[in-house]
Image (cartoon, rainbow, N blue to C red; front, side, top):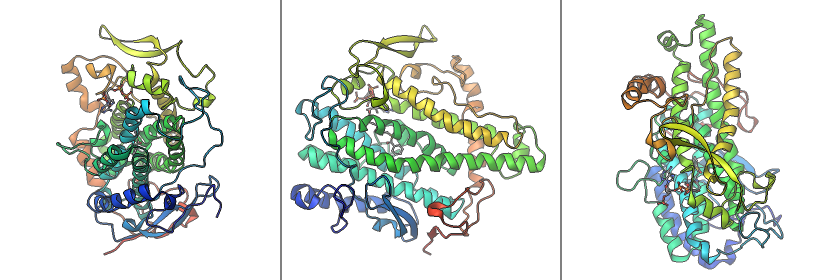
Amino acid sequence: MNELFDVDYDGLIPNNVALNSDERVKRALEKWHPGYISWWHDMGPQGFQESLVYLRTAVSVDPKGWAKFDYVRMPEYRWGILLAPQVQERQVNFGAHKGEKAWQEVPGEYRAMLRRLIVIQGDTEPASVEQQRHLGKTAPSLYDMRNLFQVNVEEGRHLWAMVYLLHKYFGADGRDEADQLLQRRSGDADTPRMLGAFNEKTPDWLSFFMFTYFTDRDGKMQLEALAQSGFDPLSRTTRFMLTEEAHHMFVGETGVGRIVERTAQAMKEAGIEDPHDIAAVRKLGVIDLPTIQKKMNLHFSLTLDLFGNEISTNAANAYHAGMKGRFREERIKDDHKLESGTYPVLRLVDGKIVSEDVAALSGLNMRLRDDYVADAAIGVGRWNQGIAKYGIEFELKLPHVAFHRHIGEFSRTNADVDGNILPPAEWTKRRTEMLPSSADRDFIESLMQPESTPGQFAGWIAPPKTGIDNKPGDFEYVKIAT
Ligand code: BYC
């Protein structure tokens, strides 16, 4: 066994953290395990727990080849604890402790801060599984169903990743937090998940793809920032999570791309040139582009809220402490302390959106959000190429960051998708031009008929270019148990 990369699969909990020689944590996790399985049965994919799903499981943390594919019943998936290999002599790369040795134990003065970051990260993982649990029943193909379940089991594994840190490094309060991660429920009035977007519904597959494109991408940015952490176990665990996260965003990007392509193709075949002739496009059984734009407006704006307030003392403290860095900190050319310097932040001043320079440390949430917006725009460009290919004049566009916000500067106002501030009555009047209406939702829902013949796809989505694990087009990705 390659000590650096390989995973011990002998015990109940696969791991590369030498759990066998850590009796206390091993016992704590084995005690947590039944509660997790029972949560998975109650809140995991509904109706497919007995089906055989062609899933990848991490068998190594070697970036060159870490996964193996096989049929698995989801409750029997080997959720494991996998940390990226330790970097020898690693240092804290930013903040007040820059240049000191990275911490292998929790620094006492940052314990509460670190626990909060880990708990928030942990809370989003089961939340997304809960949000997506009904989708298997309306999957547009076995390929897509398999991808949904792959995302779900890996979010489950990401929960394990955070729970490991809580048990290993936070004693009794870590244990309590780990238990609570199984008790909160997405959308529950009394015990909701911690962050807004994770209490929203994911009612249909367009929402699912938008969620995996936009919201999983917040996951990427936050994990990248945590991967910089001077608390080495957090850095190592989030580094490996990022490897899995890439597939989730692939599912989102290609999913939306395939929907857009199918719409454009159907319009071309039917000779419809006007993308705004919604009734004509919908008659073709595909989702019109303006409705796709509205869904995008919704998911993008909900996701921006996950970056917190533009000006944030929490973010400043976390950076100063060396706990949460910037996106690709190592590539930034500055002093990595940010004790001086500024960052431009969009603010609402006297009813207008203006850019103001604030202390760079205070503007870190805004900076991460800016990096996110740039990253999110790339896939939108590719979707637009898919539309242009069919000669249709329509461009999908990310809405203004002030649009439809519930956290931060712009939660106090109503901006349209171009960033114009609207009086409340005007906003209410124009709302369904910019966000999905109940009629839009009903139409999308009417298309959500399952397609479970291998190699077949629902009429509103194009097939993918290639299969998973190089499988042929008619591969049976899920053997549905009847
Ligand atoms: N909803 O200084 P502020 C993922 C609270 S996604 C509700 O503005 P801070 C995934 C905040 O908690 C990535 N409350 O914010 C994706 C604070 O409350 P307290 C998840 C919110 O702390 C798809 C107060 O407002 N990971 O992995 O700088 C599928 C003022 O705080 C919200 C992380 O987020 C909100 N949206 O930034 C599966 C990383 N925003 O404590 C998985 C860890 C703010 O004063 N979290 N508040 O009562 C963090 O780094 C930060 O806590 C946040 C907020 C970015 C969330």
